[in-house]
Length: 384
Image (cartoon, rainbow, N blue to C red):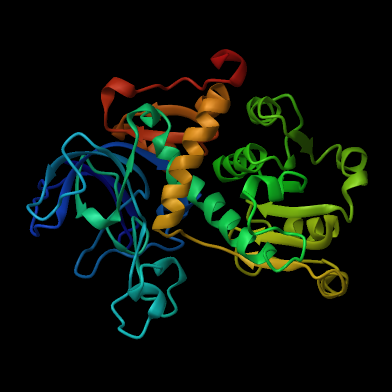
């Protein structure tokens, strides 16, 4: 079978031929990979900033944003069947018996750091024609999400952030735990930093539950990303016109969803936070970046306004299930906008352009299902 691998010792990225994997345990499932999303993490691994092959291997198969089809199930698997579409979890638990998060199925909160991550750290990923995996880490998606299910993994970031936010907000005396989440959150105001796939999916989730949502980006409108923002009823604000459109937001935003990886931009945005607000970090900035942020003001507001600053990474099974439900909901509500997030589907031999070059678009996908290849970038207007 074909696979896309990175070789850290020789600093190479290759399309390779590998032996077809086989089931070795009755709890395993064989998948035919359909789509694998390309994200900044993959590009950073291909730049050899990080990325760790499995023990005993000189290479790492890339890819963690996946969609596969079940083609074989082990004898002990009774909750999956041939033909099911599935998205695989990325992080797998460490082996330490005293790591309570990993022992209870919450490896996204692992305390030892010895977890593995598919396509990233110590475990082969999904940029391969065939994959064998444990059934318990696979999440079924309905057939109607075939075209968009590769977005589930990046959507889990927003799902986890929102789940943690709801738990935090229950400390407030006017957050009614007996009411549906939507009725509690519908009057809140949110700011999303960044218009990559993670940021736009976050904006969609926030709009879908009723947040008044603003999305900040560098590029002035109109552009394909601003079209997505406007199509979901959010407000697009570029770096060139923040003075006018952000003036009324200072001190009144309830929720900031950072999805850009820039610490200076993120901390400057904290002046937008109002009382009892929450700031969620999802991006990982480069090391040793300089900053001239007024940290005294940030600390003062955090104390005097009861603000919460939250960092979140990876997701557990509950968040995968929540992301699948959310994707189904936003796909029904804004089908053209969701379609526009996937800029194109490309064959495996296009890996060099997508992984090693500055490819345009929102979310590019390596497709191992040639029936679904699409190399042109749709816009919301075209989809409509």
